[in-house]
Image (cartoon, rainbow, N blue to C red; front, side):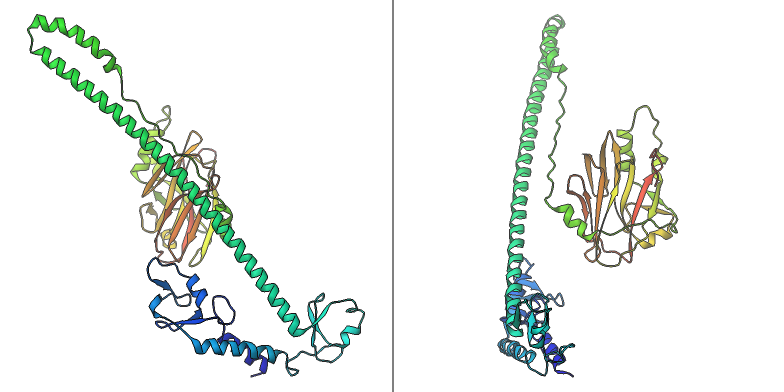
Length: 425
C-alpha cells in the first residue's frame, strides 16, 4: 500500500462518523462498540429518558454505558500531527507537470499547488503564494469560521421557529378558551330556558287541579305569559377557528419533491367510499338534484407510475376544479383487486367534497368542515410509515397517519368521482 493510502486509512480509523473530523474527547458505547466525539454523540440525543440512539447502528444505549476512550484520544492527536508531517514529506509531494519539480507552494488565485519555477512564469507573476502547510492552516481557519457561522445561523432559525410555535400555540389556546367561554355562556342560557319551561309546566299542572271554570280563567294568563318563552327556539352556536400558517413549512416539504406521473398500464379499480361520506354528500347536496347513493360507490382511480420502497417523498395535487376526490397512498398490491375499501389497511387516504367553494375533508379517523382548499400536498416517509396531507395555500397540515407500515412497494393514487362535471381523472 502506498504512503498516501496508508495516511487515508489511518485518518478513516481516527475519524468521527458524525462530524467527519479527527476524534475530540472520544467516547465508546459499551453495548455496540461504536465510538464518537463526546459532543457529537450528545447532540444526537432524541430520547426523553436517560437513553439515546447510536447513530451508527440505531441501538438504544444508556448514558451509564458510555465511557471515555483515552487511548483513542491520544492516538488521534498523534495521527493528526503525523499526517501533517507526512503530507509535507518530499516523497509525498506532487510533481509539477510543466517543470518536473516538487509542488511545495499553493497559489491562492489559481487554487492549486505549484513549484518554485511556477513563481517565475507570467501566469503566477502577481499571485499570492503560500507554503502548503500555511495554506492548509488558512483553509482550515476559513472552514472552521464558516462552520461556526452556519451553526450560528441554524441556531437563529431554530430560535425563530420556536418563537413562532409558541406564538401560534398561545393564539390557539386563547381562541380555544374564548370558544369554551361561548359554550359555557350558551349552556347557562339554555339552562335558564329549561328552568323557565319547567316552571311554566308546574303552573299548567297546578291549574289543571283547579275547578273547570277557574282553570279556564287562569289558562289565558298562563298562555300569555308563556307565549314569548314558547316562541324562543334554541339558538345555534357557530364556532370558528383561525388559520395559522406554519412558517417555512412548504419550502421544507418541497425539498423532498418527487415528480409523479400516472401509470397508463394500470387498470382503474373500484374504490369503495364509506356510508358516512354518502350521508355527508346527501346532507350538503343540492336540493334540486336527486341523490343517487350508487353514484358515490365508484371513483375513477389511477395509480402513480412511481413506486417507493424507501426514503421521503413529497408531491402536490390541484383539486380546485374537482367536486369529489380521493387522494392518498396504497400498497402496490391493490392494483390486483377490483374493489378496494378506503378502510383497507393497504390504503391511507382523505376524501374531499366541494360545497360552495369550500371543501369538506373526511378520513377514516377524523373529519374537517369548511376548509377552502385549492391544492393538497402529500408527504410519504416510507421507513417510519408516515403519510401526511397538507393545505398548500394556508401552509398547514390537514391530517397525518402514523405508523402505517407498508407491506411492500407503495404507490400514490388519485381518484376522481364520476359526478365531477367538466373535469377528468
